[in-house]
Each structure stands twice: as structure tokens, then as C-alpha cells.
Length: 120
Image (cartoon, rainbow, N blue to C red):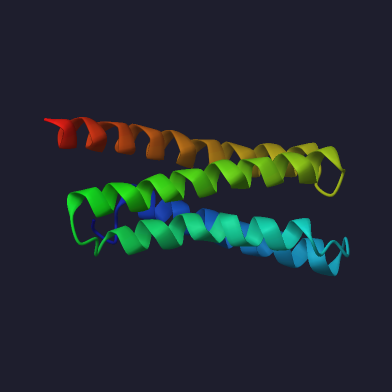
């Protein structure tokens, strides 16, 4: 995977947004539990994608991306909770959620194709 890879760039940009959301939630909203959860899962997506660049095999590569997919799904859950408990606004939720869903779709597509290729 190259550094200029779309998935890598989008996941890193998303991680930066999550870090900024974490700082906002802690400093402005004084929310310390959910913010820590979303920080962990939201930054793990890009870290796993980056880690997959040096996978030991195609199967290991696929496994790292599956875990990134699970982290993206978990992040979506934390976003929903933050919105439904009024820690973030609808505009903030929609913006972050759209980015998260985009990562989910990319990861689903990539993992599906990789799994099909490994099955051949």
C-alpha cells in the first residue's frame, strides 16, 4: 500500500478529526468516558491500515483491514451515542458520520475483494 493511497489518506484525515473532537469534548463539554472510547477506535482505523502495509502475508493484510473495519463500525456507534446524548450537534454528527461511513464502505469493498481473491 502506498502512502498516497486513498484509504490511508482518508483514515488519517478522519483520525485527526477524531482527535480534535476528543479535545473539544474533554475541554468544552467535560465529557471524559465516551470521548476516550471514540479516540481509541477512531484513531485505530488508520493505525491498522498503516500497519497492514507491512503485513506478513495476504491473509495477514486482510486480517488487519478486517480489524480496521470493526474499529470503524465501533466508531460509528460512539458517534451515535455522542449525538443521542447531545454532546455533539446534528451538523457535527452528520459530518463525522459521513466520513466514518465512507471509510466503512471502502473497507467493506476492499475486504470483500481480497477475500474473494484469497478464495481462488
